[in-house]
Image 1: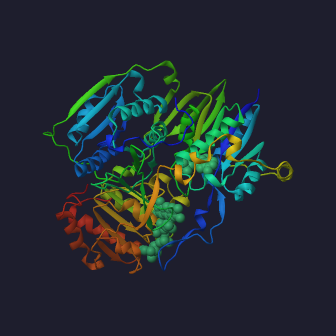
Image 2: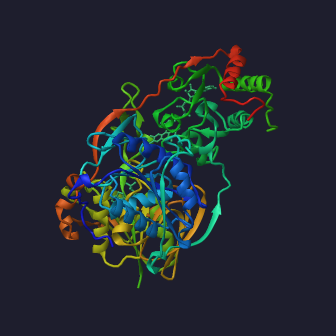
Image 3: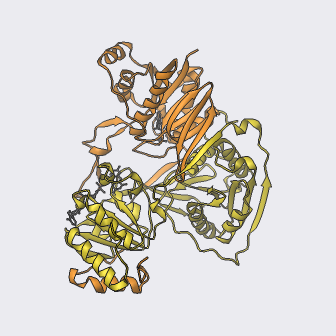
Length: 348
Length: 265
Ligand SMILES: Cc1cc2nc3c(=O)[nH]c(=O)nc-3n(C[C@H](O)[C@H](O)[C@H](O)COP(=O)(O)OP(=O)(O)OC[C@H]3O[C@@H](n4cnc5c(N)ncnc54)[C@H](O)[C@@H]3O)c2cc1C
Ligand SMILES: Nc1ncnc2c1ncn2[C@@H]1O[C@H](COP(=O)(O)O)[C@@H](O)[C@H]1O
């Protein structure tokens, strides 16, 4: 029961140690965002020389717990019940808050997926602490162990650093795609403890009637993304973008105005109010490179900008710049890829 | 007894009118006008849809300075029955914890409540914490990221739009439903209702009226503190210019570095 009370700092902040990561899962497997947070958590735990705890809740969590261990956790706690196969706001937040009270982590980070944000916001109230959403960067001050949670400001080209100095745990979420997933290390030592949980009746009020899997393309996992902006000038430009993307086995991205115009669904929008992506190759065609777009793709390995304007901001954020009209440059690029790699453009 | 519905709203700067200053790269908000947070328009419409079908009463509520008043009147002109403005100097600087606490206390002060509607997030701070936070304080069930919802005999049936797909949940009331942006088409105000709203006016509550001590809220009781503004992390990129007639060499380089696969991906 959460009494209506103010956020209360603990008596002794030094009792709180280590970093805890909540592991998001779907269909009994960890989400990519969960592993990204393990990587971010591991770095902070190393910096303060403390443990990395992980929590995973589901029907049968052992396999997921082991996977998290290999990716860098020291102690993984699994909570199993047949009633927990799907995310449910109340019991999941009760369990995570319970583990927080038991382990007293200094920092608690949660993947910023929709269920993750739902969970984190409830848990923050239960543990009476502060939560920072959508962090692009998570770091810890080694001496004070203060979490430095950095997030972009509203439509702005600056970032705020948000601290939660007195309350514990210091909580944050980051959008999926913000961090790279760490490589697994089969030799990593870790402990797994799986607990069977029995839920009280009133915790199971949320009844899931159905779940319809989405057919729409999820661009966040693509290795190659070709994005078009207002420079396309007309909806047909997207066909050219798609042709190039298909050839490279990649997905189509767009800037916000293109999604606003309804030329393609919102799932394809890259940026602050869209998706955060980190492909190996990001090709930006006819995109000016406003900060709200850049934040969504800055984690990309190689960036190519195709723009008529040599001074476009996008060019400064690109490894390679091709100056010219995208309607001339992209067909040449397609021909060249055919010549060099033997890839065929799909008959679009 | 009529269903009691509450809609939480926030007034935010209009995103479309905010532009980046080309000289110093900061956001120019001086020209920005205020609007109702987009998702809250959809939250209000979701409540109105329930009122279309059931005997229900809608209270819109916001914690804000008095400038929010015309927006509350606008919600009444669209069909809400009454509006509450929680206005108190002491709440200034509240982060999402004390905001959720204050709003939850005001909802309790209203009396019986069946469904609380909130937006999935605000367009200015965009945390999405307030809806779930209110649910926690009220010990209510929660359906976040909902694109539609209906009421049936003490239950809310809502469609939640998640990354993996759409989940349909059935939860008992009292419940909090957070509504996603653009999930419905908000109806317009009518002239008749506009005049009625003007006449009826809004209800203004101070912290004292909802029974919250002033030192539980505001900047000093907010766990999070904004420490400093940092420039955007710039990733150094080489910006190598590729001449159009040297595209083959460029593509070869991408193949050699493994960025593009031989034979297509
Ligand atoms: C709160 C807020 C959130 C936002 N969130 C996002 C977001 O998530 N994602 C996002 O993308 N934006 C977002 N924006 C909008 C963002 O500020 C920019 O307005 C937007 O990214 C610009 O889109 P663009 O680059 O397609 O268009 P423009 O800025 O108009 O750029 C078009 C570019 O195309 C070039 N060009 C024109 N014709 C051609 C041609 N034939 N060949 C080649 N190049 C050509 C031009 O030189 C120019 O550089 C947000 C804004 C706000 C205020
Ligand atoms: N000051 C406030 N008063 C009333 N409701 C609010 C307030 N701030 C946020 N909300 C509600 O909570 C939702 C999410 O806001 P946020 O957590 O700030 O992203 C909004 O869409 C509103 O419905």
